[in-house]
Length: 204
Length: 204
DNA sequence: AACCATTAAGTGGTCAGACCACCTTGTTGT
DNA sequence: ACAACAAGGTGGTCTGACCACTTAATGGTT
Image (cartoon, rainbow over all chains, first blue to last red; front, side):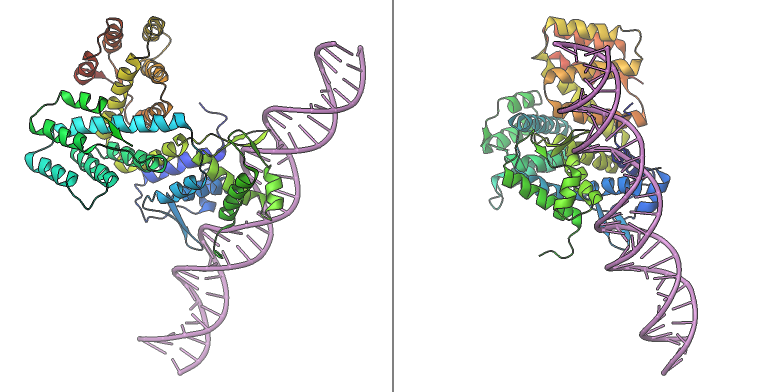
């Protein structure tokens, strides 16, 4: 398939498979560098390149003399590094924001089938919570929606995109948007969700 | 300052300063690994650990035999890698397949606005290409659609999900599905795309 | 038996050197 | 003038060697 793939990328892939196969959770220990090197038929330096990259992304935590451990996913590692290299492409920025919007829209639609009156009240409360900033409301609002979709994968992907887009430009919608969506939920009006997202006026 | 900081992190910092000091822009060349190693008083492997991490973040691009270059900032790389590790936490088969289907659906809708008659012929050709397996057709079909959306990020995310779902169960639709979608394109019938995806009979 | 110091083994951190594969450039020979 | 070849620079990779740190086993002292 990809004969030109570098070794460290292959190692990365293998490590992922290992984690999957052994069902490792945050805090669990990974094999030692030497052991990985031997089992994957790769030099230790190549293994380290993969591990270092993972570390910078905040995926693993490494403790001198002890070993390498799976860490709770902490995005600030990578975000920190990325923001220190202030390089931006307008095209990619749009891609990201657009993709994010699409996922939000789908979440709103999927949640439609799982939402009850109490949930609607909860959403209403978020929108009117004066202790939250505009952006925090947005995150809380959709986090709840994603929770309702019961699709953890979509939620994770969205969360990821949100973290990255935060670094570029924090996006939220006008308050009227959220209220309008709530109204659609209340009035059992599924078909207009699509339209709402397409015509929405984004604030800043 | 940071006595316990690892060498590769220091190198990372120095490289950033170098870029800043020389006002390097995307496409510009960085010093060679050996040169960096010498000037920063670090081993070449340490320099490489830093560079590999940067590469995974999408900050640099490395070309064998030529050198290392600053790249346009693309979140894709990191999103890709991060997703691959986030995915295994939410590896419910249904979550994955469902999310994938949603993205495919959205791609089909977005492509709707960018597709011309020639493109439709191309799609038609893919579906009737007898040299392709059912799964290969699926990949080729949607790869073309994603290309038309001009959103590389979505394409990558989908590709990633496809790779993962491959391990679970290779999913493709009945041939009639593809033909039906093509028909919708031909007849300028946008509104039924949604329905097509929701009522489709999957054939593994 | 309980305790603490020592030791050994395992692990990450780092470096140096050696090849290889690839690209560019300049030289050579026709 | 042109094509073929050669050399040097660059990333890609591996090996082996230390070092620093942690943990667990060891063993002797109290």
